[in-house]
Amino acid sequence: MSAHLKFFLLSAVVLMAQVELRASSIVNFDFGAVPITCGLHYAYQAFGGDCNSNPPQQDFNSAPGFGWTFLVHGANGLTGPNTLFDPPPFTGLPFSQAAFLQDSHSFVAQAVGIAAGSYTLSFYLGSRYASGGGDDGDQTVEALINGKPIGTWALTSFTPFTLETAPFTISTDGSYVLQFMGLNPGDHTAFLSDVNITQTVPEPSSFALLATAVLGGLARLYRR
Image (cartoon, helix red, strand yellow):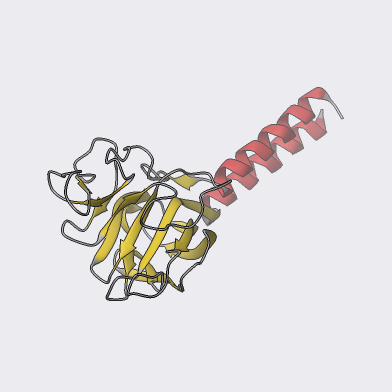
């Protein structure tokens, strides 16, 4: 095989990978861009924030680079590992902070630019390592795109962080709101982090153009 052919084939493989695996840009996908400044290493979202309150509060929504929006007065916020909030172990996972969704009045959302195509949403989801006394991990989490559910996960206490996925399709290029909601009322808590959206099937037009270019290039090289 000639050096020119090897180079062309390698370029085609790289280009194909870029088309098939193109990910939508999620700001602060691991919830680590804004550190938790409260001494207990967890905090609820609250306008202004007050780490000395009980429970501790921090204004994540207005922090530069946070990217997400918590329900302003909801039971949601951020935690690090090994806090009084009893999150699952973070050991060996690709993140050091996670969002928590407590009660049915909790959500976290972000507007994401997404091109037409088929996608997979992936994220780590776990529940509170506690049970009894009304504080547990028996929470149900729903993922939505522009208000349309694309997946629902019913958790029980002591569920470790698990990589979850949900497929969805976008018909028109645009800005779409990705949202995670807690559905169960009461002191029931789930945790999530490392959120990604990855294109799983290239758009037909993109794939056809790529195939035409690859075949044309191979034909020219073959004639040489």
